[in-house]
Amino acid sequence: MTLDELPLGTVLDELASTYETVASLPAVVERIGGASTGKPGSKLPPGMSETLDVDEHERAVHELDEWAEFVGHVLLDEGLAGPVPDSTPGRLRFAATWSTVVENHPDIMLRYALQQDAREHLVTMRRLSRRGTRKVRTESACMDVACTGQFVATIDGPEVDGYIVCDRCGMRVEKDVWERWGSRSEWITVERAMTILGVTTKQAVWQRAKRGKWRRQGDGRHVRYHAEDVRGETSGRMSA
Image (cartoon, rainbow, N blue to C red; front, side):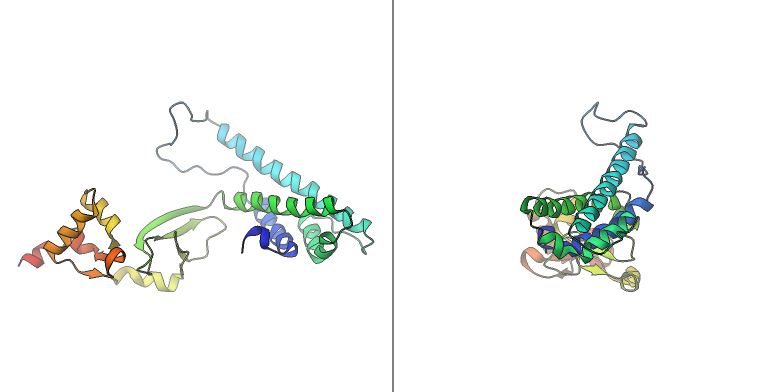
């Protein structure tokens, strides 16, 4: 279900929770060292990234504070029993409880604007809540042989829950399962084998697989090969 399809009450409830997450996070995102990307000369001056982070964080929180207060006044004007909570999350949850009032407000333009504003604020809060999240690719292929994705682990940030998630199909594997994968065989895609072998065509991989009698899983375009065979770790055993 897309964001536009979510009921307004659901949007406002999530907005309240996401606001609490963003408000509890530091305004400055910790930068991870490494080579920078972008065109030459496009790198920000020292300290500018931190300044922009703080500005974006404070502006988003302040704008939502003001918007939540305005929505509270709109609801009170419709004759609802108060009082409206003093905090922004409380006001948003109050509005979620009375979301049908907003959706049926006699001013058509106002109710449309409020619903659009709620969704735009949620997009911003979702992004800011994930801004400090660190993810790493595990190099472990998805368990669905028809999927070409690989599992990604979240190692830091509010999204940490112990699961690894496929970056294509979204398959989730809980910690109790993937922790036992240390002893399992690794199966890799043709594309991954191309990278390991340093070749540029799938045909080159298929030819080596046939010549070396690599162990395989799946068929056709969904075929995967055993990592030990691709890396040549068992070449001595096979030639013996």
